[in-house]
Length: 607
Picture 1 (cartoon, rainbow, N blue to C red):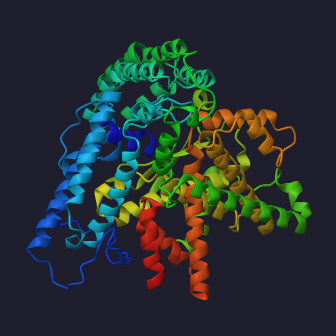
Picture 2 (cartoon, one colour; picture 1 turned 90 degrees about the horizontal axis):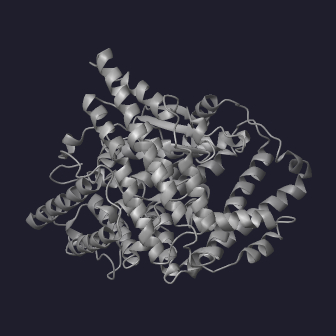
Picture 3 (cartoon, rainbow, N blue to C red; picture 1 turned 135 degrees about the horizontal axis):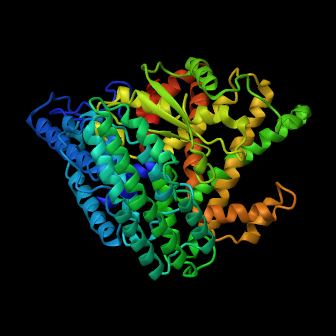
């Protein structure tokens, strides 16, 4: 189901279930919000579960359980990464290796999502359990967002320099866990099918170009550079090394069988994997010169509409319009700048330390262990879990992010993986806060907590990029203020600087892609902050065009969390408890912020 894959994508989400009546997530932890007659009228009767309720709840569970199976079972790679034991969820096999990417399939699946929305409209919310009501609200929010993209199926861009499919899929393949012999066989089949999958992507890009929607040449060059990283050297590459190490974890394999599998893997890398990347390189090279527009997404015929879809899809924001959201972003940016100015005037000596500071811990694992201990005073207890800290293969350092967290299967959530990119271009001083973002109390912590406390499998896989990245950014900011070896005032200055820097980039994303700013306008804007900003303006301008709304998921998500905290502090006064606030947010779990806000209001009223 490609439209679902596009919106509920494993490729983007992880680098990022059923009794007769599902009880939902964390029943009783917080009250369901009151709703108006225009949305979800509440039944005032106090009747116990009658036959209508039983029937409605069973039908809702059947519908959401089938939707869950459709999502996780769409492709073999999705299924493997999302569920360790598919049979326990009633799933036998996936219909394809990687899913399907085509404009026609996107149209079909938009129709399927519309049909799902109609079925959801048929439920009387008063007959559902509290957990089902929450799931319904979340689904309806996602489907409202999905509907914005109808008719714009060729605007989707599967390739980009660091967050595109071509950059992330090899890492997923290198992390494809071998639980048994069949997983080895499945992996080899995936490896052998990657050339066909990339041919499908290239065909879609060609349709993209024919419609006048192809990316600029500099963006194509960056995709090509990314692809060149995967033209692997035989017998000396991370795909070969990780395959061998994973084979050692499979019980019952003889040395002869291992050797045979290693030979098959090497042959497929040479015959399918490397040619697949060469296919993309050659095909994208031929598409250079086909870009028909200049500037950001708003310069495309329906670019502003598609940008709005991306905004709501990638942030889940509670703001009613992009303009209203931008106003909040600018206010948050100004707040951070004022804090920086105030601290700088009060403690001018700190300004000399902004580029020359060091946390108490200097090694990544020691940093994570310290973060686990320091953060627990303000966060609820976490179930026992473990993590493996890995480094990005040297050949990929130039084209991958500074760090990323790989989410484990929902039925094996205790085993987690974090990657660190040791490329010299990334400042090692930021490892501490980066590991707070990716690990504790960031992505790893939030993922483990929610999966341990939520018994609705659909909730566990529904996307909420703004919630997840917003949470990780919120706690990254928090980590600067811990007892981490920094002077407390320096920590506050660095935290404000982090938010201001991110805010500057996020605001420029909107100015460029929605407001239609030129590179010259970006340079003029940056002169308020930098001397001679022309080179920086070019870098930011191109980055935002290549990855529209990518920065917004972090910044807008952060703003949503921070605004709730400020509101809770103001309303509760001396009764405000940071741990209780965090517990509410974690119990609520990943969801669009328009849904969270109604529950937050109820939580505040009942605190």
